[in-house]
Image (cartoon, rainbow, N blue to C red):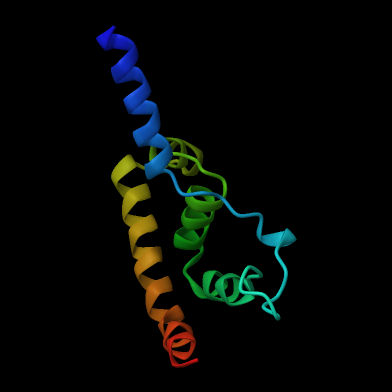
Length: 106
């Protein structure tokens, strides 16, 4: 049954594309284990973004909403929701780059 095969393949592709969400509030600070993560620097970087970009990034990444849903919630167009998200990510990369460099030096 090709229909079942294609439906399953689409489901698997969707799971691979969608990022795994992390409960930031339950994570622990960086310590002895590499499995423990400190997201406080990410929260600070998000707080430095313009409010519309920060809210869009939080809603897309942490809440897992689609761009269409974000656009409806914020009362903007689909293209504006995408633009805010990708601009926010670009600013986050810039502000978090020094942390990545420090991690590479260790």
